[in-house]
Amino acid sequence: MPSPARGWREQFSRGAPHPPILDLICRTPLERPTGEAVHYSDSGFFILGALVVAASGAPLDELVRREVTQPLGLTDTVFRPPPRLRARSATTEVVPGRGGAVCGSVHDEIAATAGGVAGHAGLFSTCHDLERFCRMWLGTGTLDGKRFLSQAAVAAATLDQTADGVGPGGCAARRGLGWVLQSNGRWVGADLCAPAAYGHTGFTGTSLLIDPAAGIFAVLLTNRVHPTRHGGSAERIAALRSRFHNAVWAALS
Image (cartoon, rainbow, N blue to C red; front, side, top):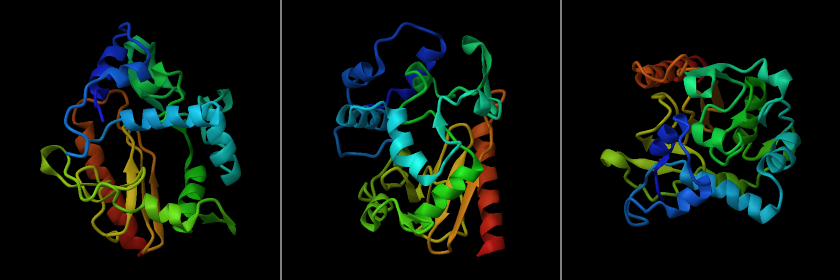
């Protein structure tokens, strides 16, 4: 897949003119032959969101509400939060080109340029809703006695889909369908969880970690980009995640 995300963010944060994002992705040359390496990029999930919209004929936010959040009872999980939820949103980065402190609007520049709804970013949520979401995964697709995902879908999502691929710098890059698996250079950071645990991190400091062997999950909603992403915040959040998850697993497992 192409991986121009960093350049896009710099371009969009400056407010520079740009072509439609999907067109830009399709015209971006590949960095390396398909199948040669695993590279984390927003491009694939942005395209996936566009494909889902094209196949369903429905806007992505409407489809997510109808097929995911509403059935699961995730009442505060939305794209483009309304005023009642915007007031509860954490302020992220101070971006002069976006009017100062960003609050109640997606932090990701690409998703913001796309109107706040994209396949890779833009979804707001709460610990309460994410608790239900994680319990559904721990239940191998069931929640409160109702099945939402088949066992086969859960198994496929948490299976290594990259054939023990290698990412940048020669680090392992094991990935499922939307989940990061161990070992991986982008692993959420937890030494005490089981080998079958899976998770994901968010740029602003958020993370999920689910350990089906121990029956434990952890939701961490932090804000490492306020007022800026610079100053070593990436290294500090990595250390915090590791301490947090190991403390939770030591206490509960």
